[in-house]
Image (cartoon, rainbow, N blue to C red; front, top):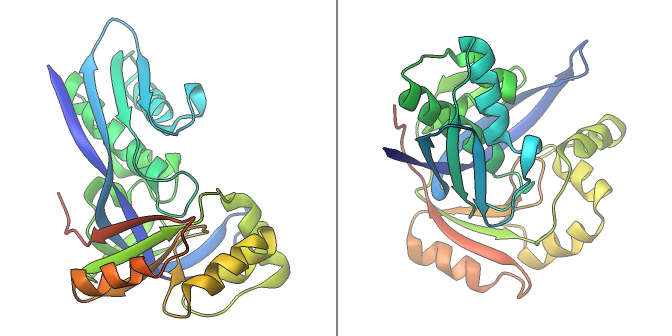
Length: 251
């Protein structure tokens, strides 16, 4: 039996960094919105675990799909051999949460295939955003980003533009420690410090666009698809672009 789930992306509609914890992680206050842009993860029980990837994503033990399965196996105390096929559409390291969403989908699929259960704490151990992707919708996230408070959905339409290069989340937060930030996304100044070429991209997009997460993708929020499509037509020619719609919770 093959099971499949869409692993949806997210946007940070706002993001404030509120402090640094004793363990080195940053405290945030952010509003997350799930969107219909998604990867697709397929899974089936197998004699041994494997991962086949279509698109651009890390392979082997670095992939969050396999890390999620390993975490679930440790929690259950037994092997859960699973054959995964991951079809990537969400750009990596763009602030759209693709890896975290893949991890959440892997947990749900493996649990269903092998008839086991897990708690939300297991998801949080894989990354701050993974717990959000278990249910999606819209939520205010505090703490490390793993304390979730459901809120009203946004949108409904978004234009997304990505400059086709990745940004390291760790590097952006390290830069925030030096330069701080302000505005709707307080990591923007730090992202521009890490990748100065991002400044030209942001300037070409214009003031209506804002960065999501730790970058490097930007978006606008619009009331109609036509308005969002008009924004996409004004994006730089070299940009990867997508039209996306807000989606509600799926659990």
